[in-house]
Length: 539
Image (cartoon, rainbow, N blue to C red; front, side, top):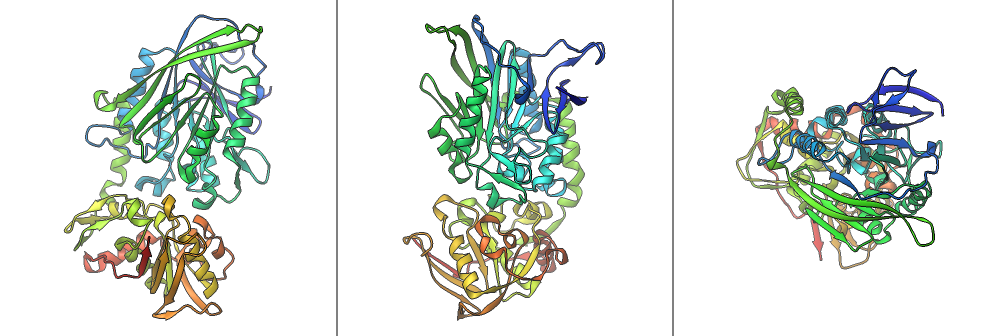
């Protein structure tokens, strides 16, 4: 193979580029490159396209620990648990106790967060580079800032970022900087690692060039290739968007599937051959799988691998924060603190921005956002998706809102756009928005200067029963100035009907939606979100 470039990774590992792809090798560079690599550390990654077919030799039992976490967007701990420093401390503690340790990060970490609004997740990669991560999954939130930004983050990472089912349309290959799969070595064991990016990513993020293929087919094919290459175990990571985790769990393409499930803070199932496990986000608890693995030769003379798991759930409240990462995380937090703690206005009524409230019916905060968008852009009507609001919390009346609160609620780089749409396009857009309420998808539509009646008892495509703008029924052949976000205007979140509509106001000419909200609230110093019956939802 031709080695194009080598540099030292975050964990003392070696980052080796083979052609257009990159893989992480955890090793020590000894006596210079002329002599070669020596003193190999317990875990390292190899490019799966460059590996010989390695036979499995009989061995005694080998102890392997897989450490799994996901969704680590918060820098600081909450109630004494989680946060970057405690995660780093947990990894350090486990590495000291377990010579054969693999640290797998399930992704969902580059967005959304207030700081990621400004640096597109660069601070997360910087922090993870100091934690000896062995591999990370690229799920839907990794793609939030777009293809180019994710590639940039991948090249910054001292560990491989994996997506098995994503392909660059222009090349037919895994996107630049990312890996289709990696093989990690722990002692004598070789572990194949894959990741399934939810297909729904193409609708909920700003991916321009990436095609997301069927995750089960991609994982199944790659797992077969890894096994043919002689790996001892295959591990797959995935998320819950679009119920991807359910289809992957049903297919069982790997020996171990580590997944995310919003409704299950912790779960593990094992039937003697297949193990699945999940753990909640923000590293409040970290999953440890202690595996006893043994290579044998079967009665037919073919190599075989047997393994038994012993799971542990690590409470990070019991782990001391890593001092270096604690300083680093606090420095990032302080960088924006002065600006973000500036007061914007006081709430005059309770406010609910939880996911269930935003994606199933009318919501007071969403009303305020979409009204602000329409007024700022002088639209006849406005539309905003519930998934564009991410605070996921409740505020009591009297809360003094800060810039941090607004950026937390509206963390995306969305700006306003005005489209020229027909009444039919507007009707179809709202109809699409209410087509997946049962799955709590982020496409749920919130409207300004409009009223809609929705019947969830009817099948998708027939749920919108009436729609009016400015007090008058929508004329399907008429035309309306629709104010919306740049994300929806580009067809995001299932709003493909809007993608081809003429633009009357371009996104480059307007402010971020979050900035518009801050300015609107600050004008009076009070925030009075309210429900007014504009959305009637029958169940």
